[in-house]
Image 1 (cartoon, helix red, strand yellow):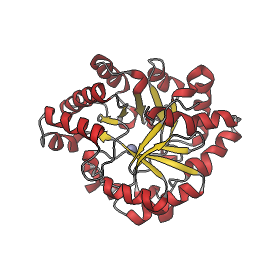
Image 2 (cartoon, rainbow, N blue to C red):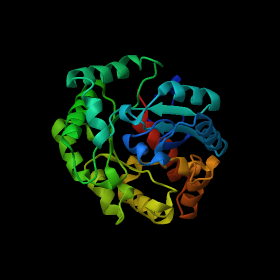
Image 3 (cartoon, rainbow, N blue to C red):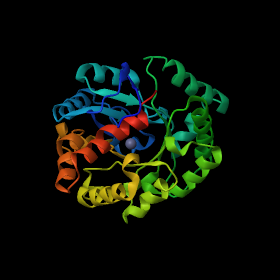
Image 4 (tube, rainbow, N blue to C red):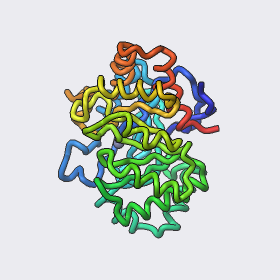
Length: 309
Ligand SMILES: [Zn+2]
């Protein structure tokens, strides 16, 4: 059941609906700091992103959550055009990416100024588009949390307390989950509004990897679906269904984290933004998931996490 009333999309506020299929984490436009060494991460091809969104819609998809924050070269004017051209609802977030790109970004403003900017965006909309963010992103590095990332944590925690927006964390390849939880709990984050991402990038994946988060009342995403290099879907779907059986079916989100040119199907890559509606739903069905459970995972959960009252 969907408990939230509205979604703040880049085109404004729309009511939630219980039959909209989501991809709860994608990238449509931007580039992180390391795109210089890894040009596959350079997403500046508006026409191809539009094609991908059209395929998503044709497969039955309705809503995507775009995850490129300030230090990921975000541009919401481009996202707005994509939403207008395709009719796909695009949600965005504000906040920070990680590591080397974060330090120069943080240096642009004082901590207080950053907080004011984020709170103003949440309350009054972003200055160029008027769009309101649906979450606050905080990211940490591989096997460490840097000094700059501790500062971005403090800003995100304060912004969360003022705005009530949910917090979504990026864990680099699923590392530092326990340390993230500790910092956020100490800071007073409401764990019913916390989602931890990228745990399924771990090589030794099992239910326990997610339980660390779920048992503390927070949410998880299985967000590398369809990407063979992070494991076949089959094993991940078994884990998802096991977690659902264990009572956590209302705190799991599914996504592809499309973030590379080589993920765009229209350019010959895989799995494409269409993956959740085009392939994953039927894979869940083949694994024995009921229609009701599939709806919970791909329609209702993301609306409850990102929706507003
Ligand atoms: Zn991402």
